Image 1 (cartoon, rainbow, N blue to C red):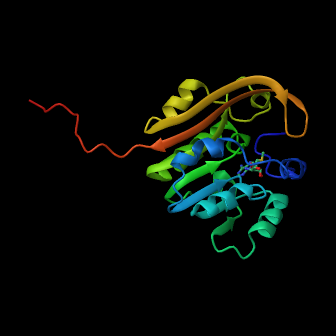
Image 2: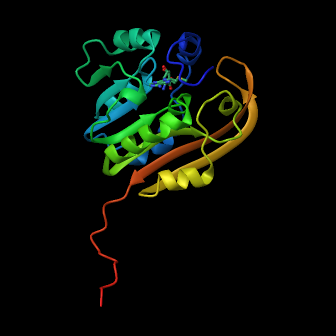
Image 3: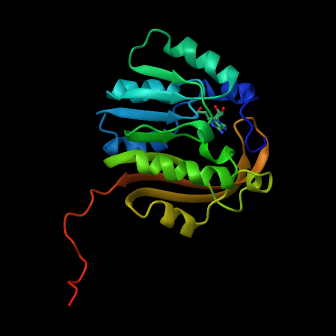
Length: 206
Ligand SMILES: C[S@@+](CC[C@H](N)C(=O)[O-])C[C@H]1O[C@@H](n2cnc3c(N)ncnc32)[C@H](O)[C@@H]1O
């Protein structure tokens, strides 16, 4: 797996297809209101997109991999709730949204390109809206291969204007969906954007 790879996910799609939805979606359920627009970023075959649409969201499913796009189109064909958008994160201008969901996808972009995208993405989430997804920690095997890694303080800084509702930092030796051994270091995150404060805390000038 290489950072910035936006092709070659076919074997992952085959292996992931029969599996249930990622458990973070269940953890995020109390904040997934189903109102407004949800982005499914790195949507793959679109299972999460359909879950979000079933909750009541209009969904934009963003995916660049041709194999993913063909499976996504096959799944969502004729579904007025889901719009498929062929784009890489780095070229995608996120619209204002109530939910930004990215299951095991963002970190495939290298850090220098992911951070500007994350800044745009988190800015696009409306107050009260939710981010759901994963970032890698610096000790993850794939970070040495060029995927983006974020420390705890990076996560705190990125989500400074959010309430972190779920933040599970998991570090363990295990296998990938394809059965390859690797060291995982993952931040599983559910965060809701705070309402802009209506109270001005600035002390008066004398
Ligand atoms: C591990 S798969 C996860 C797919 C899906 N979210 C799921 O849970 O099954 C990672 C996905 O991220 C997409 N991806 C990787 N790099 C990307 C980039 N730079 N921009 C947009 N999507 C990207 C891949 O094409 C792939 O579909």
